[in-house]
Image (cartoon, rainbow, N blue to C red; front, side):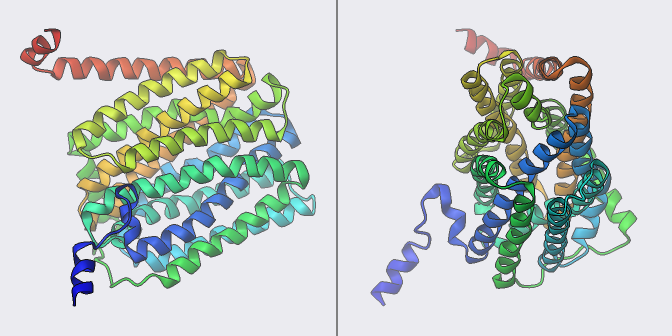
Amino acid sequence: MALLIVKAAQPNRWPPVLRALHHRNFRLYFIGHAISTLGTWVQTVALSWLVYRLTGSAALLGLTTCATLLPQLLVGPIAGAWIDHHDKRRLLMKVESLLGLQALVLAVLTWLELISPTLIVILAATLGILNAVDTPLRQSLLSRLVDDREDLANALALNAMLFTCSRFIGPPLAGLLLAVTGEALCFALNALSYGGLILGLLAVRLAPGEKASGKMRHLFREGLEHVWHSPSLRGLILGVLMVNLTASTYAVLLPVFAHDIFAGDARTLGWLWGAAGLGSLLSTVLLAGQQGADRLRGLILFSAIASALGLLLFAGSRSLPLSLLAMLILGFGVTINNVGTNILLQSQAPEALRGRVVSIYTSTRFGFDAIGGLLAGLLAARLGGPWAMSIAAALLALYCAWQVLLRVRATPESTLEESAR
């Protein structure tokens, strides 16, 4: 009896920064997703290197990235209504199986040397369509994997931390694999990695969740109206749009800088990606212990300013160590903005609308990442990578200046006087 009382008094023995792992369902998902995400990053780096190795075209890098991400903008909001209408766990297992199949096809075509730029773009678009369903589906399922709603923000931060840990480990690992073997093995490993999440989801025990009812058109409109009529949500979505349109373009331009600016190889690309991943990891550690919506909003604005500075530093650097520092700043800023916004949106979203709210967020994040990547690739092909990144930095700096001005105007004069004193 005494032992039971002690256990009841200490229901969660995990450190506060890891408290969501106390929940069995989230823990199973977390382990499976860790395996899957590591494979995804290995494939991401290998695919960008394959494109540049075959064609040497910065424009095609931008087109491939656009094909991967643009479906998020076009399909994502519609997918949100569909997600809210179905059993999320079963739907996610089906989507993960299709993602594994896409990676396997890419591996076989590359191994047989049948891959071509056209096939790469087609397979990238296929991946984009599947991700347009997969990303909001996974994000909206997280709320059901923790039994205590107060742990949802920590679960979202840990989910992002897992993503950024993989981003820190995956690119250098991909660089090593590319140097030793080739792209086909990277794609094959990613195909196998999806099995980790599928097995985790099979072990999860969930009661039937609340499903939205009605026609898809009505559900789609209801989600848009919910976001549009909330000034707070609109502002958060606008911030995600601007940061991903500008700062996230570094992902497209990294092979250009690794190959042309630093005269490096796949390992150089892996180190640049890894530096951005380390910055992202640090940001998610910070967010995992973050409390308070007002403080988080201020941190999101700071992250946009840091992203603009990181872009400018990277564009002007010709030193690899300095560029690694710039990538760390960029990874930190972009992740704080995206993950912090996701935490605020999900903390305010009703369960029946969660899939649609998350899908609007993910479609904005990845859709404008795609548009920004395409524009950056085109600019880099004409003006060079440093100029393309400098233009992105200038646009983001203008947005940040506007946001700071709005905050100053919204501050009561009495508060400003106190600050001056």
